[in-house]
Length: 445
Image 1 (cartoon, rainbow, N blue to C red):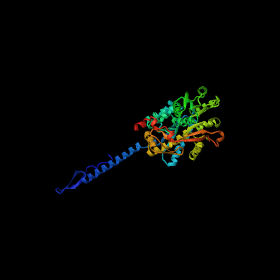
Image 2: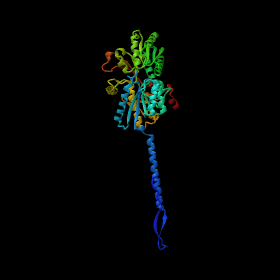
Image 3: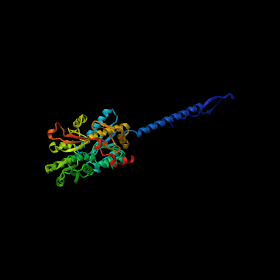
Image 4: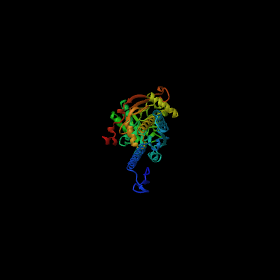
């Protein structure tokens, strides 16, 4: 009981009919009883309101008082340069910039791990992060086979997953999830941007060197469809194990195909090694040309402009695109050992900014699907990608850019590697939802 009920009292009373005094038990008066009942109701009402408020706080609160975010990628293998430690720097900058710009009281913690491009390793890390380490969201995750596994684990745990590293188009298609957002690029964007443009310029026969996992297969398939749609022909594809250092047999197959264009459906160190060895075998000197379907500024830096000049690629971000991207990228480079940001780094930064906006709006990070739904509801706006939106299938909508690697004499300063040939509007850069087969879209249609 919140208070003690008034007990019967022993009171002295005069007896007009008797000659002395006696005592008797009496109860509280009617007025006192009404007063007591009123107090009971008032206290019960207050207690009920307090419990309701506490329940609301428990259901709409930041778990453990901290928004904990895990950056997972390849920290030491073929994708360490375009992602790796730089993605951690980008996440740290996003957290700092968000708090500074908004005055938010969110406490944000960034942790990281190396998935070594192995789905089983990435899955084990994700489960530990979600089950025992209090992680609320995972960012980045290049290597589509790892990302596909983590997307399902994230859904099962009802957390949030913001991808900037992986690009398999199935991530916002047949394998889409209410807990996952794909921020930067995908194989459909790369294939249609580069494939269509090259065919229009006369490169109408293709042979693919494709990384032998989900990303490489999807990139070769999506580009092949774009080539054929533009009037070209695919003469063949060879699948190359991830992390291969000897591309000689694969380059010889490409040479034997006599295709005008050898499409490199790989990324990171695999792209660098395949370009170097194609040069050693005289592939370009023999009359064929290379099309790097995924190439990052870090790859050009490793190759040098002498080797990479003339290559065309489609990208969702370039650090020197405008004043805002330039200013942010200079800050990033200062914290990243002088290395400028790739598309993946930019996606980590912008994706985390938007995630934090959604968490702040809800004041709740415990329901991952609700946070992602809020991300889709709110328009996106950041200094790297500008204004945009996130579709129901989880795909961030934004334009892309067809760029060409500059000749050495055209580069004026550090990392001045690209010239923009064409801006591809979002309506052409992103696969239509009607073609993706995402169950989330089908359920609502």
